[in-house]
Image (cartoon, rainbow, N blue to C red; front, side, top):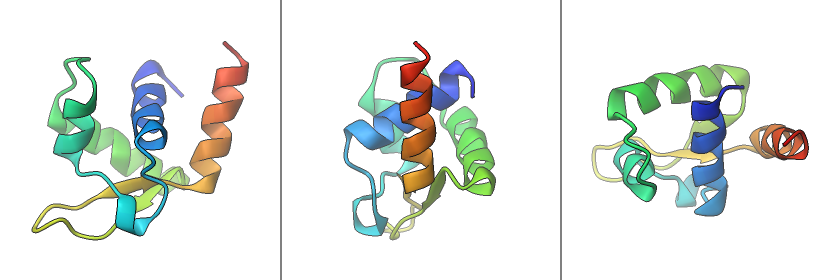
Length: 84
């Protein structure tokens, strides 16, 4: 887990994107905090997290995909927070 991953998982959890109906689009994730994240960078990290089981696809928002943090992602995030 790197800083970018920690930020993305934190944004999803803080915005209660914890299930398919409450998923966030990449644009919503980028605009949630002023970290200067690029949409393409966030997309790549989300794809990595999907393979790891930390995030999953939510319901479509128009034509945009949405993402939410899984229980496994929450556990990983809490573990990292405990290491701070």
